[in-house]
Length: 626
Image 1 (cartoon, helix red, strand yellow):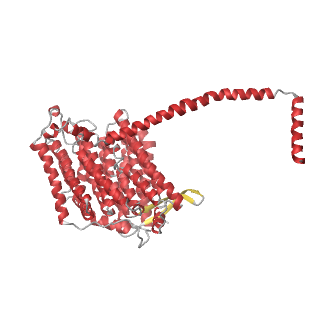
Image 2 (cartoon, rainbow, N blue to C red):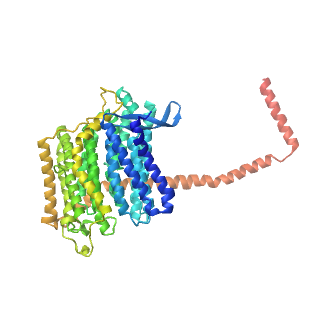
Image 3 (cartoon, rainbow, N blue to C red):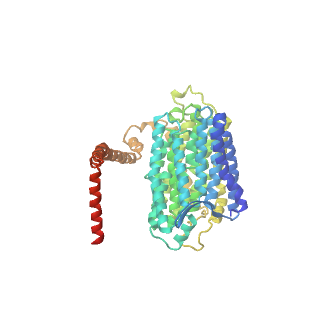
């Protein structure tokens, strides 16, 4: 039975979005399509209030994990719809609800006047609902279903402007890449059913704690592969930068609160399973570190504002993977929460700039000197950029410093890589800041009438920027929520959900991290303001070609795609055209020949029938009397 203090928030959490989508689709879409966002915005407010109530419930030291209804039963295995309200769920859900609601408000202004306004908001809120279902699931099958719903909604949103060839191609790339990753999730679920006869989270924890480790490596690798696809880690990261073809609110929600954070959350949820496989956490740490550094370097050379931020997202997701790999689950969740605020603010700032140009995105070639014409956007971007770079006392400092501290104590090359990542982060975000708001405006944009965005676009951005500055002080409450929320994990078990505590500030690490961020910011200032032509002079050679190909990985992926297309073509020609088509074409002739033979045998002659009956009767009698 669901406790009374959880019953109402949970009903609102799911009931409000479902009701808003149904009302918007069947009523508002037909009667007043330009008002479709109103019930959806009301739903966002209700979901945010409910998520805060659930966070307070978990903060008080309580948790909830219980099936609510049975979906299906087959033998000794069944699928139930259940809810797990615990530390990871409450912490991430509160961020997703708050940040996602502000992005919905922004979208109401950004998408105003678009012919597909109603369709956008219905799919956008479905995306939001799918993430809520994923966060609260207490069963891997249930999580997998919402995981796939997130993928379908992202496909529809990335390709929202389907009249553009680039949008259709980007949506297809994202969909197919995530399907490749989802095979790992599906395999893990099937192995769980085969080995444990259950996919419920707490029962899987029990089996792992009891030493039931048959095929656990296969389960853990499948989950890790799925997480690398959804959270855009090497080798399956390449779909995310192209996903910028969707509207800016889609990019902000996808990068800050949904979709890409789902992979990290899956690993947090599955950490007892991941940790049971020797060497796998270390592999995850290295995947995260190398992805973070490589994507950060690529971001330093990009011109498109949204693509710079897209590679930045890949880099910060890599930092979360690094934190998980060294066992700091609490640190990874904390940075996921902080990242949601500053990345949403940055994307919406880029959206305001593109909106002023009446474009879906903008290049650094097209902007410059916007600090005076767009002061609020400039202030919001500056706050969020300083938070991303990790400057004290903004939110990003506390979460990023915790990751650097974890890598520092882990030692080895990971500690050096984490410091390089801090420097690269400072460079790419301040390069973007200087070129956009302080650089000389290029000739082709002198006639562009840049102006500050309307309140519906600027106020949500400012709220998110302020949140990115202040959320760092929520480290203590996040730790308490995580500590009190891990219900039904066997006490004293050797397989526990990693370290959920945030480290105390290490002055050496804090100063090193800040110094590296300052080095990156100073380098960006020299490259854009002191020597303004340098950022363009080095282009056109092998270095730019190498970076544009993502250090050659895009070429490798192209080879794989070409090989897959060639194989499909060969199989199609051999099997479809030659074998299957030949079979279908010869089937009528064979059936006709057989029918003719039967027709010749059945001529309606009574004497023939009697002779055959007599012969058959004699054979049967001989068989019986033998």
